Image 1 (tube, rainbow, N blue to C red):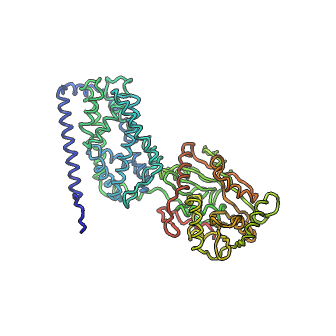
Image 2: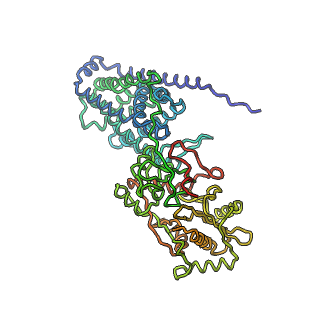
Image 3: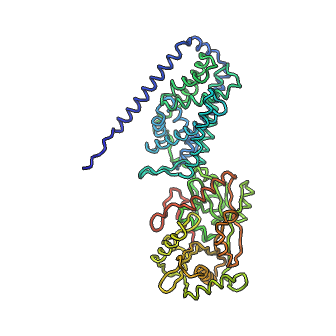
Length: 618
């Protein structure tokens, strides 16, 4: 008989944690009292009274700068969870929540409570997730900068080795976040911070820590300016000790760490500076935060102040048929500028595919960058034309030639000529094998699925994102051509369609299909496209450069039709962004997520994110 595993009620567990924190705080205070017993109270009072007004003013200014940076943590967190809260309000909430939680201690619980109170329609669960995100990412940033500072200015000789060890443990985290952006815990899936989000946290943490350390530094009149790096290292380590203790304001652990690391400073002056620091940096922010927490509900922040949504209109056609591939990646049309862009989101990037869908001929790159920043992603333009590449270069973006597209004019295509000798030979092989090609009126889905399965068994898992995958609903919107030998389906191809273009998408043949099967299918498509007066037929693109060597066979196949080759480009705001986005794109292409059901199409929470198939015109 199955018996449930006994567990403590949540309230009991919470009380145990709070009791443990209280016990640790009392023990640290007892140790601090023992340490301070030898210090004359009058010396501390004299040091405090001797502080000039300008030092107090600089300390207040530095504290304001630190909390200005602190608010940015919540801005990153709200972008990560797509809460829709405007960044100005997210930052105000972050400053108040952190000011309250560092005074009360139990950072995650008190911070979650403060965020839940400050944002009127925030659920407790989401408030807890926001707080945990801020806490974990800040601790990672704190550990990183502490390791760096221990290498540069260690207060004690042995700390340099600690810095090396810390970096050795922390640097692989970036690789892990890139390769494993989502963490599954049973049926729960956690989306981990993107590299851009982590980079933002590292930058804001550097400003926050430097400004907070300056608060303490200006309150120490006897500190030589040359010792500022040592003080910064000691401060960061003391802050880490205080946070890990869970005590209110790190009480006890913070002071004991500073006393242990800054042995050259007079203890009375140091304790006077710490006391003034606590009044300015801990007590004052808490006094500002409490009235906000006690405000009536109608005065609290609300997510009704959302970021503006982008409008959309339905264009009659689109210049590139291949943009329909984004339907398999939950892509959408990004509107609101002077051109509509087909975009897909990956774990690290917001990628505009090809040229604009409609509107202007040049994309609104500032809109693309802004949208990417709203979602903690890197902006990338992929497989765009030379015209868009020139526009991106003029905007200061970095541009790189990545592939070449093979295009044909169906009305003028012929198999005659020396350049198409290989096609004629392949067609003869197919004809002798008894191959018959035609355009599909109804799709023989069972046989097509069998061909696709055999093709994947021979060639490996089908790639995705920028390339289509077998799905009935997806193929139903395309022009599909079938190759038969008797009653057996030997292979098929599909083409995206728009008013002005067809573009080759899926190419599937049995491993033992007759030679020339694929050539015969494409020639059949060219014949039908010519009869339908389609102005342009694209055989899609082939990578160039070093990567292109892996696709020499594909290039030779397309080259046998003697097409016109047109260069396509990739563009990004910087080389580092391009490298991260390109690696992320390659990972999602080669290992796409499984297709959900017959034809996945997710619902989106933004007005401009709608079913892209409305643009196909088919």
